[in-house]
Amino acid sequence: MAILDLDSFHEIWQTITRNKTRSLLTAFGVFWGILMLVIMAGLGRGLAAGIMGGLESFPSNSAFFFPNRTTIPYKGFAKGRWWQMDNSDIEAVRSIVPSTRYIGGAVFGPWATDNNVVRGSRSGSFRVMGLPPDYQYINPTKIIAGRFINDIDIREARNVCVIGLKILNDMYRPGEDAVGSTIRVNGVYYTVVGVVQTGSDKINIFGSMDEMVCLPVTTMQRADDRGDKIDVLMLTIDGKTDINPVMADVSKFIKRRHMVSPDDEIAMDTFNLKQIFDVFSMLELAINVLIWIVGIGTLLAGVVGVSNIMIVTVRERTQEIGVRRALGATPSAIIRQIMAESFVLTVISGLAGLIAGVGILVAVSQYIKLNPSDFFAPPQISFGAAVAALIVLVIFGLFAGFLPSKRALEIKAIDALRDE
Amino acid sequence: MITLKNIHKTYNAGTALHVLKGIDLEIEAGEFLSIMGASGSGKSTLLNILGVLDTYDEGEYWLDGRLIKNLTEKEAAHLRNKMIGFVFQSFNLLNFKTALENVALPLYYQGVSRSKRNAAAMEYLERVGLAEWAEHLPNQLSGGQKQRVAIARALIARPRVILADEPTGALDSQTSLDVLKLLREVSESDGITMIIVTHAQEIAEKTDRIVRIKDGIII
Image 1 (cartoon, one colour):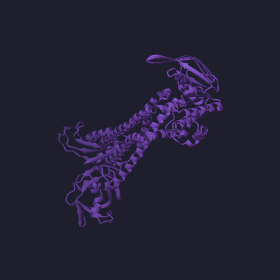
Image 2: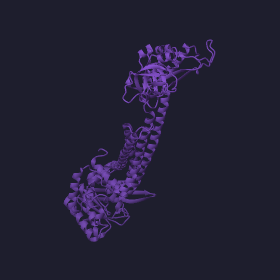
Image 3: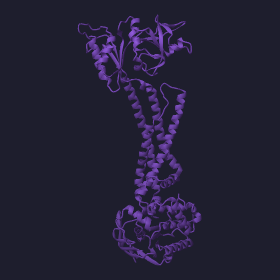
Image 4: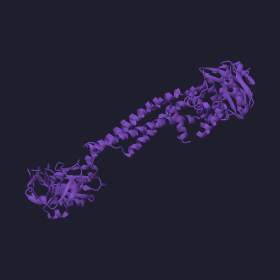
C-alpha cells in the first residue's frame, strides 16, 4: 500500500483537523521556516545577482600587464630604469600563448582636459584612449551604431574614432547620425565610425566606454608621439586554460625581451579579472551557505515542533491507538498513520510557506523592477533551490514522524482498553 | 471453537503476580456464555488472552483449530481483525468519527474501499436499529446507543467470536437487558460464539453457561 492513497489521506486528514488550533500552530512553525528559507534564498540571490550582475559577460581569464620602474640592476642597466612595451610584444606574446583568444596593446591618452573634444559649437571633456580592435571583447562593449575599431584602422593608423553614448548625447542633436561626422579631439580631426555603450555598469577596466573617445592604438601613438610604445598589454585566453601560469610565462617572456631582471617583481604590474571574480564568487558562496544554514535551522526548529506536538498527541491518543490495534491495525499501519500525519502536516504547511515565500519574492521583484537598485537585482528563487527546499521538507517531514510513531508503537492495546 | 489447556500467566511488575494458574476451558462454536469473577480474579487477563491482546506463559490456546502461540504483532492484528470482535464497557468509540465511520473502521484495516465499507457499516447500523444515527458523533449518542454502535463495529468483520468485557457495566438495567438481547440475537442468527465477562449475577444468569473464576482458576 502506498504511504498515501486517498482513503488513508482522508483518515489522516480527519485526525489532523480534529484539533484545528493545535495543528495550525504546529504547522505555523514549518510554514515560517520554509518562508524564511525561501525569502532569504531569494534575497541572497538578488543581492548576489546585484553585485555580480553583468560579470558573466566578462571573459574572466583576462590578464593585464603594465611596465613599472625596475628595482634590480640587470645586464648593465642600473635600477630605477623606466621601460616600455611596444607593438612587437603583442605578436611575440601571441606566438608563445597558443590559448590566446583576444590580445592587444593600449595607450592611455591624456585624462579629460578642458573641452578637449569639440564639434561645431559644442564641446566637452572626455577621456581619450588608443585601443586595439579586441578591446570590445576584453571589456564587453555594446555597439550602438557603426562599428568598433578594426584591423585596417590599426594598420593604416587612420584618423577615425569611436565615441561613447554620452558623447553622442552631449555633442549631437537627438536623432542625428554621428557615424561619418567629424569631431576634433585634442586638436586633431577624426571621422566618427561608431558609437558604443558600456557592456556592463559594474566593471569598466579603463573607465566607462560611455564617456570615452576611442582611437586606434596606432593613431594614438602617432598623435601623441609615442612611436610604437604601448602602456598596457591585454590578453584573454580560452576558458579551459588556467590564466595564472600563462601570466607568469608572459611576464617572464616580456621581461626577457626588455632586459628586465626575471626576479624583479616590481618592474611588471599584472592583474587578472579572475582574482576579482573569485572574490565575488566566494562572497556569493558565503552568503548562500549562511542563508541555507540559518534557513534550515529555522525549518528544523519548526519540524522539531511538529515532532514534539505529535509525541504529545500520541500520548493523548492512547485510547484511540489501542482501539485501532484491537480492531486489527497492524504495527505498520500505526506507524504509517502517525508518520503520514506528521508528513502531511509538514509538507502542507511547508508548501504553503513555499508559495507564500515565492509570492512575496514576486512582489519585492516588482517593486525593485520599478525602483532599480545598484545592489539588488530582483530577487528570485531558482527552480533548483525550490526543489531542494521541497526535498528537505520531505526528509524533515519523515523525520518529524519517526519518533512519535515509535512512541505510538509502544502502546499496547490492552493498556489502552483497560477501564480501571 | 476455543480450547484452553492449562493456561498460566504471571505478570512481573516488581513482584511476580501469578494471575492465571492453570485454566482449562472448552467453548463450542455458537455458545453464549459468561465468565464471572470478582475483580482481581483474572477474568480480564483471560479475556485479553482469548482476544490475542496478551500472551500467556504456559499451556495451549487453540482458536478455531489453530494454536495461538508466538504470533508476531502483525499476525495477531490480522487474527483480531478477522476472527474476533470486541465490545467494551466504556464502548471505546473514536469520538471524532461518526457512528458510521466507527463501525466501518475494522474494514479500513482490511483494505476495503471506502464506499464498500460505508455501505456495510450502514447495513450493520440498521441491524442494531441506529441507521438514523449514522452521521452522529459518539457524544451525541446515549450509552445504550454507543454500545449498539460498538456491537455493530464488532460484527462488521464477521468474526467467529465476540468478546464482551462488562458490556453492560456502564448502562442502566433496562438498557443492559436490551443490549444483552441484541448480543443473543446476533449470536444466534450469525452463529457467533459470544463470551461475556461480567461480575453481575443477573447478567450472567441470562447466558447459557457460566464460567466462574476465582484466584486464577475455574471453579
